[in-house]
Image (cartoon, rainbow, N blue to C red; front, side, top):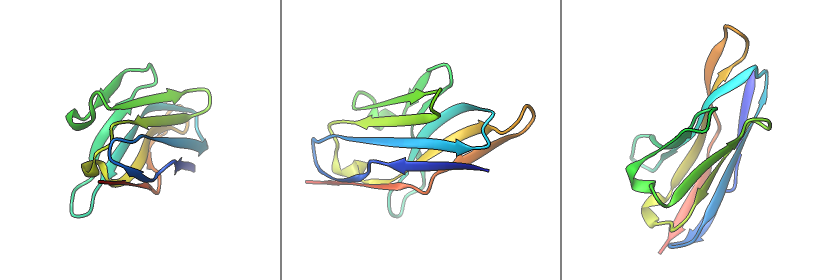
Length: 120
């Protein structure tokens, strides 16, 4: 079993910054892509940013230039540095990891989410 635990959410004023962190633990052989998704009330969950084990990144257009995703492969962690936050960035942010639990085993895991609220 694999667990993803997020931290770093909270309340921030528009224009401010927050840093989200996610740590993966458990039966991990290796981790392919790790990413952050978000879901605002009434909306579908959407991709925010993803990073491969090799460091390639992809961002939603809405966060390009404001958010930066990074990871530490040795520690199985992924971070999301969020700057110039806007009220529309308010959502529950979920960590996701594509995990190999063995040579042949592979599963997609999610954290429980951390709430980010951006006030005017």
